[in-house]
Image 1 (tube, rainbow, N blue to C red):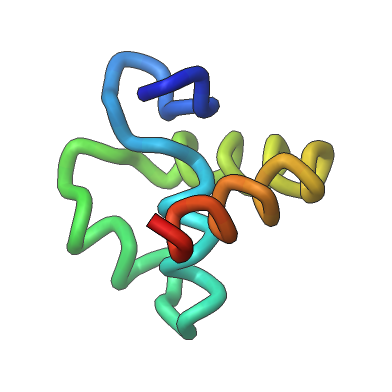
Image 2: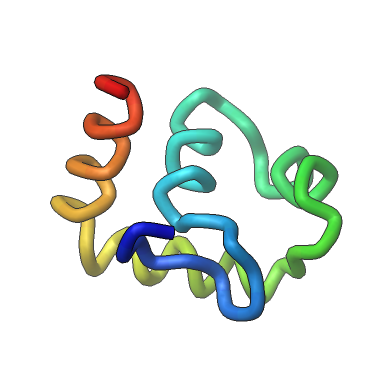
Length: 66
């Protein structure tokens, strides 16, 4: 995924989940949209996103610009 952090075993970038969450989606809604993910996957995504918030913001901005 172009160097973006992804959920292990998938091609789902963490920034995509963060953006979805920022738009108001609950964890349950995200899990419904991505049935291959688990609550544990989301937990790890949120921990990563908190630790690397500047990276998440830059990836989201780059995606919006594209």
